Length: 290
Image (cartoon, rainbow, N blue to C red; front, side, top):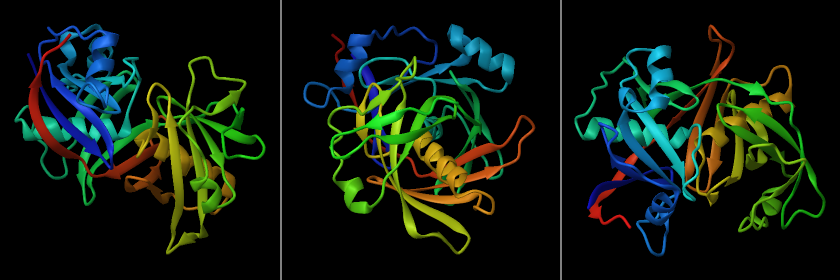
C-alpha cells in the first residue's frame, strides 16, 4: 500500500506521494493508473516528494543551490516526465508545510528543485508566489489548428522551463467554442511537443494598470486542464509581447479553475516571471499499486 494526498491549484489537480528517501519506483504505467479518473485516484499529474540528495536529477538542483533540500518529481497524467509545473510547485510546497517536512516564515523563500532548475516559493496574499525563473521566446512559432477554429492561427513559442505555444483568439464565444478533447495540431510540431494556450484579451485590456485576459489550455501528456501555472505565465508574457511598449508588468489571467496573478521583474540572469495563486489539499488515503 502507498499513502497519498490529493491536492490542487485552481483545479489543476495532483496525486502527491511522499518518498523522502527515493526508495519508491513508480513506472509510467503505475503513474498513469494512479492518475486515471475512472480506475485510479484521478489527477492531471503526480508529485513525488523526494529529497534532492536521493535521486540523480536532484544533484543539479543541489549544485545550483545547496538549500534546495526537496525535489519535485513531476509526472504528467500519462506517466511521462515533465520539466516544471507552476501550479504543482505551489501544491508541493503547501504539502511540505502541512506535513511538517519544511517551514516557511513570512518574507522567507523555500527553494524547490525541479527538472527546470531551482524555484523559489514565498507566501503571498493569494497563497504562494513562485519565481518561475527567466523566460525566453523559443523562436518556434507554429500554426495551430483546433476543432472550433475556422482557420489555423499563428502561435508564439515561449519557454518558461517547459515549452508553450500561445495562440490569440478573437472573442469569448470563439474561446468557449473550442473543442479540446483532442490536442491541437501544431505545424511544425516542436521536437518535444508543447502545451498550447488559447487566449482572449479583456476589453479594455488594461484596467487600473493591470492586464487582464482569459485562457484555456491543452497540456501535453494530460489534455485540457482547468488551470496550468506555467501556461498562465506564458500567456501573460505573450500578450504583453503583442501589446508592445507600455504594456504592464502585472497581469490577471482567468482560467476555468480561477484567476491567478502574473508579474515580471528584472533578475540577474534576465527578466523573471512570477506566479501567485492558491494551493489546497483535499484528502489523503492509501492505495495498492499494481
